[in-house]
Image (cartoon, rainbow over all chains, first blue to last red; front, side, top):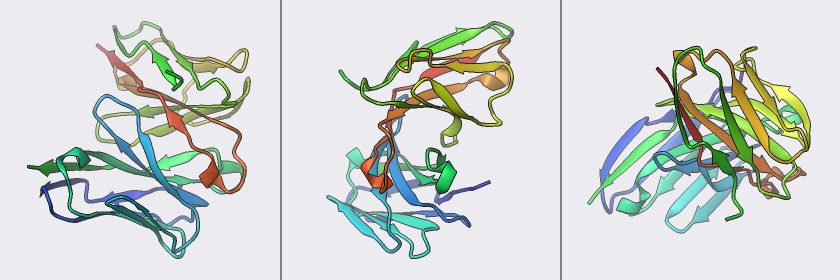
Length: 113
Length: 118
């Protein structure tokens, strides 16, 4: 069974601070996705990283895929209150499992004004 | 709105009753997924359809659960003889056929159907 561990589970920071969320696994994934979920809503895809070592930027968000494709990080620069939400990483299986996403438990981020 | 829609959004039922959720995927998407999410957890995979064929079922999907996609369009998820442990948000998602690289295939989630079993 492929597992993804996210840390920290909860994060409360002041507006303007930087933060990093980590997603780790002992399994190799063909790609890894980051989602953001608001309370009572479904997850919304932020980014997909495919190549080991890949770095993608989405405005103030920087996503990195580990060289071995087992881990990833999300870095937010100068957090804003609108960044508040649940951030989920999800690994895409390999081969016959490529249709299935394995989600971490999420990091609940609160940005305080 | 051309997103994934789910109905009902909220359902409260007594233990032992049957419930059915409906999902209407994005119209041109041939892949449809059901996930379940409990409080404090990420979504967990339940089942997957490609067109009308159910190609995979998780071990989480006990024999009380049945999912269908009869014409390859909308899907239903039925839970029979509900138990309190079934209380969760049931998420439906859809995508187009996945080619390589997977990064070209986005999965779109619906807003979920909340089930509370009392």
